[in-house]
Image (cartoon, rainbow, N blue to C red; front, side, top):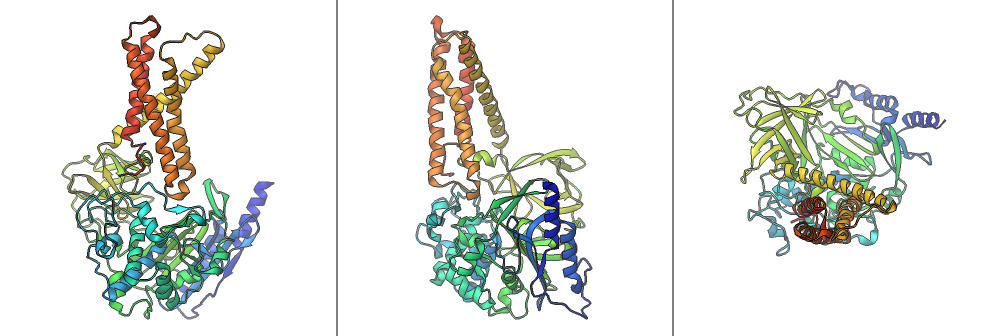
Length: 619
């Protein structure tokens, strides 16, 4: 019965379509790259929605060119349980698409001669603002735009669950500064912190809060009356109220969508991902990048510079980033845009600068295939011009660590699983964990082959000798400690499980009065108990708060405190076990128990220290 009701709801969801201001070109014979007539764009999207009712709970979308909005529609439920339909007034969170307001703001100030994209950003910041810089080379605004300032992810939470915990942008940046692990310009690794820092620089140069600057210089000129940007949406009362009506959904098992509630969290680094509003407003913003009359810049040259490539894939001519916007190829169409995701929403903004055709979508459950409908599938990369000669076939085999992951601190244990495993399978081809392959076509170039598409991948070495495999915004680094760390953690997990079984066997022996106590046994029992304490509570604490994108100070110090206590227990037990092993006292038998305890505690101490489980700063 429940399945029938669910199927009925899905069918209703697919057919519940609201068109907001649809524009139709009666005699327009232009077509999308996929061959759809502009007149039929709406029908194509509606057909997809009807044929894929389980692919979403709600989404809104807008398709435009440089002159007009070609189609706008809303599908499904913004609150499925209360049967509230999504419509043109439903608001969604922009997520990382918000960063485009930062880069537009930066280019406006550049146009006014107030910022140099190649100057050291310390010129625009309070004295001694950075605390975790590893290298003396300057970090420039261009580094921030290209996400290659060298920062990894950090330990501290980027967003909070209570309005009372919202702090100023400057304070949030100081509280969450990540470690710099690469020289500026060496590795492209996406950074929320770097984008928020650029927003703070906009504040410093303009003399206005970032919120006021964006409203005055972006939202108001574009007529975006239904968009907010503050973490709590209080800069737009209408949006603040409407956001409370949106319900988020997630799916982990097949097509079963689970309600996640309103998922109201507050992003302290708000220039990096806090904008929230209607699809019409986002479409106005996106369309401004391609319209002939863009009110955001006084000079066309400024917009042209913004949309021009600022970062290429290694030493190739393949564009990766355009001053904060990402380049994307679909077939023969070269697109620019940005996607975003928050706890509640997924968004995408994409456009073709040549034709002006573009689209946006926003969803709180699902990811509609609007880009594929309009622009087609991703391309098969043309390898012409690249040598098929490879100097050292198979030499790239190994496990690479994600450059964006947390490389130091209590989160490092999670960073061990942000990996790219490459297994050489012959003929210059590598297997990627059974989900894709990589074919090496030259010493520096590979092709990632997945789902009938191929993507260019570049390989190079940093000044410190690390091998970097980069796919643009995603980069992975060779790490000699990665495999030993994984082995160490596996051994630690094994002895933890073994310790649990030993404790159970002791308990059973006690119950049947068959247990014979031995010297220092209490410490051995404590170490077996605390091995579980050292792994489960921190994992639970970090996992239960992963929607914060990090830990609060209290949580971080709690984790480190637990690990410090466990470290002390393991240390004391190691010493007593050594004493028991060398003791000639008959009560110190059997010797093998002390030997096993020594091995277990050495592994436990090494795991906590090497995996930095007591390091909350991540430096």
